[in-house]
Picture 1 (cartoon, rainbow, N blue to C red):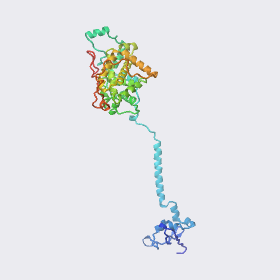
Picture 2 (picture 1 turned 180 degrees about the vertical axis):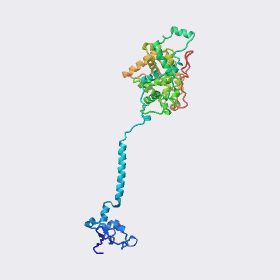
Picture 3 (picture 1 turned 60 degrees about the horizontal axis):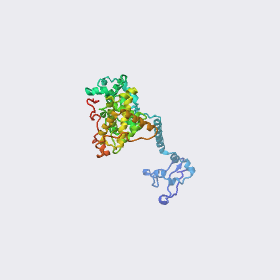
Picture 4 (picture 1 turned 90 degrees about the vertical axis):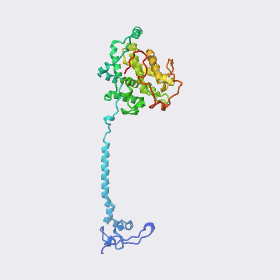
Length: 410
């Protein structure tokens, strides 16, 4: 064909072998004029595709010829891969837009995952002061019913009567002690969450039911089942212990001892037993003189609860008590606290003063135990024996009344 130029090239093939010159294409203004043979083969028996994609033939072309080759210009510009590149760019652009949209979203917790705020003792107390407790107040027994010689002895030699202006506050205490845990009351659940968080250091809420409550000394998955003897007052006293800044270090010391490998005990249930002792002392008018002197009931009862818990803590730790001694220890602590309310309150005052000055803490109470537990020398329960279903802890209503005619709270 006139004016056509056949370009041939000798180049090294694979394994370094030379290939014979073969006609590649007729290049005229970027168009191929070589006529394909049968089945798309050239006259030399090679396919057109082999010539187009073969780098060996193109390497021998002059630069000026390459510039005018439309096929090579198309390959240099991307050829058939250009649409794919545009498609990928569109996907990348869409992904970038989605990512930018995600960055603009402000993270926010739904209401049910927002941590419940802590509640103070005064706020919880105010809730009960403004709640209608008339039904509960009709069933309380704030003092013991005495008859015969016991009534005469109490009248002649017993403590003075509580001032009239303090009776309403005293009755409120016993009404709270008859109040059960109500899941529909937000204050109730906040008290539970506050106790759990302050003892464990957790910042998130825990489920209302579950084995996690055993961590803070409840005996089951539902804390309400341990409130039968003290009602909500048991939780109120624990709340006071963990929320008062001065009492919190003591609360954590007691909680730490309750986790001891051999001296462990259920912290919350033990606390409710101390609340029961405090209620008995108030009902038996052992705290009346101090209440009259301070002109308050709730404050005195709170301090008496902490002072009694401190006494038990010191005795338990110094005498290496275990859960098997719990019934005897609680009875001993109750007897001493009710007979010596003024002394036990002074011990708490001295303990807190000593801590303020950084003088340390004495682990043994001032007065040694006069009635040591008969199980002192007995076998000790290990960590596995003290916890779990085999543990037999003294219930809040199991201790026998000390005086005839003493009324049970529930």
